[in-house]
Amino acid sequence: MNPFSRVTVVVATQNRRHDLEHSLPHHECPVILLDNGSTDGTLALVRQRFPHFQVVELGCNRGAPARNLGVWLAQTPYVAFADDDSWWETGALGRAADVLDAHPRLAVLAARMLVGSEERLDPICADMAESPLAAEPDLPGPAILGFLACGVVVRREAYLAVGGFDDIIFFLGEEERLALDLAAAGWGLAYVEDVIAHHHPSTSHEPRGRQDLAIRNAVLNAVLRRPWPVVAHEVFAAARDGPAGWQGLGGVLRRLPRALVCRRTLSPPVEAARRSLDTSRP
Image (cartoon, rainbow, N blue to C red; front, side, top):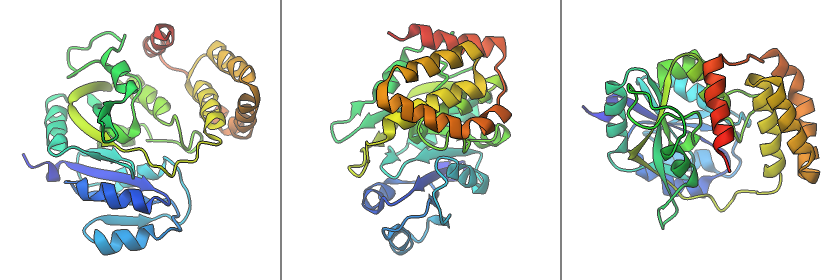
């Protein structure tokens, strides 16, 4: 079956015009591009060179939750995410749609991500391939509780039912809460290595500030869904991490009231599965 009728590609971007020039020509399926307030000519480029893509001008940076609007606008049962510096291999989305058709409980299909012109396997994919979680016979690959957002195809129905990405985490590590909520709702998540995506990391990344952001979001993800002892462990780990840790904890305090309002602990089976990932790490 033609993947065009089953899969929409959703791309969120901000000030990555040069990356989009390289990545957008690779997309086979319909594309919805969410622009998070770019000021570098991104919108003009896309409208001139890719007029067949749907462009949504958000006017400001909405972070990872910008993808939620793209999923809502999609008219297909499945949505593939891509970043402005990533794309799907030819034929990959047709294969992904076939797998999702054949596995009705599957909500997230995580692809094999090849990085750079050398096509190195992303280390996260190696971790997913060796997932310690118990095998689930109705899933097409190893069961997982995490993924790379730029390398997944999601079942639109399931994604919208659990609310998609949230603006408490906003960006970096936004996948964890979504994965946990999907599992808690009874959906399956699996790594399928014969579906392939490509990632050529942008040279415009600004590394400064990402460490404290990662620390902040690790604590917030724990506050949102994990038991209090896990939250305490994350806080103490951050406090021992020097200036970046203290910066991260400062960010937690600013977002903590909203996180507490949205806090909901996991069912024992899902928490046990998530804890098994903690204990399996070196």
